Length: 194
Image (cartoon, rainbow, N blue to C red; front, side):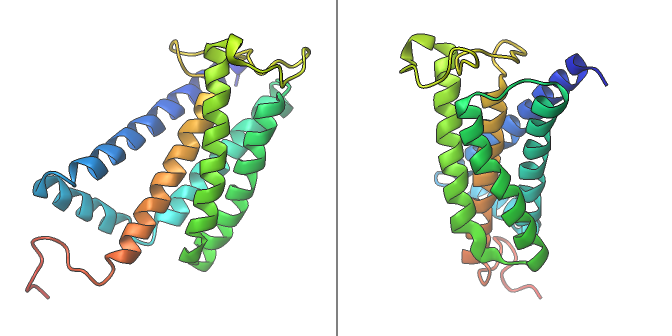
């Protein structure tokens, strides 16, 4: 498959992830104000119970493999901030995979911390791609952090893809936390049923 096709594939994947994040955040916020949305949120969270770690692992593994494709097959040299994002993402693929296999839900705090750090770096990286004058010159001249090797649909770049993946992992960790908190609470509308 050509680099152009893979670039489009990764960009479309990032947009799908973004849509999932936006829908998830809308449910989280909306559930605070409307009981119908809260009920929908609880049902969706309940349907994901036991799968959150696996889904987060799939996201982290896909992002890891995608970054390896870009550097090792497409030969795009990672900049300093790309490396920092990899430092956050690669361990997530490993620890979420082990946690999903062992059903170790206590991994949430570690995975969330790594994902928040990675998302912060990716957000800054994306920002300096948009506004290169904000860069403090922390990257090399030969591999500038402000260069966008991929720029699809007018906004999707490599840091945007990473930010999308980190955001969805954070969302899945939040769902896992919420599910653990509500494990013994009946779903809305299911009171009195067995």
